[in-house]
Length: 228
Image 1 (cartoon, helix red, strand yellow):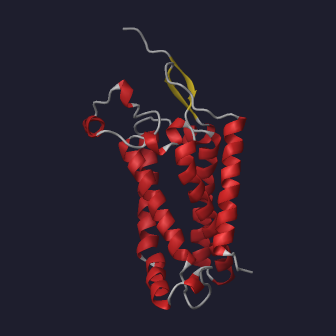
Image 2 (tube, rainbow, N blue to C red):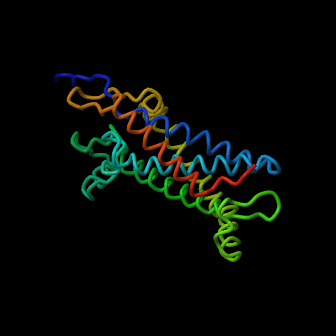
Image 3 (cartoon, rainbow, N blue to C red):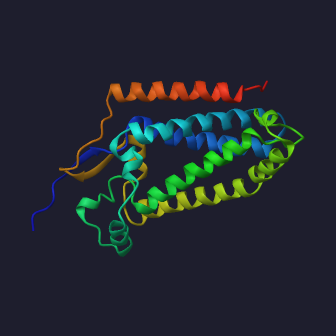
């Protein structure tokens, strides 16, 4: 049997990789600052705004980024999902290139939950150490409801999703032998030669930088950043 020819192929463009790791750092910092409380809550709010900027950028990049960063690659036909669950993938399914069906679902779910958590933080008020920059534009009842969500269901739900994500990555990386962590660092995977690399040139990176700058300006204007 002829061995399939393989080569390094760029799968994740630089903007997607930087988004991934920067969001992880901001999330960790936001959790730590919330647990410290007191003056650290200033940084909790700032990191929340940074996360909102990153998520807004990722939503745009899901339409304008590289092939495997686009949301169009996240959705599979029922027959493909069934083949994935049965372990009978076909080469045309590309499950091992970008996100497989379960991975794509987890990414979309985490983005949605992160957006809800950050959004609720903008109007949250713990009446002790800090309040969100948009708390003044909603009623106290609405603020109280979303404050409770932010500190309880939203927080623990996110912890659960992030924990499952980490366990899944560790399992696939070290048990199944898939190249996930390295690919999210350098962007490349060893794939069949017919797989085409994504566009990751200077023009794409400048577009991403412009989008990020626009998202940052929009979040700054929305939130007002009325923190010390």
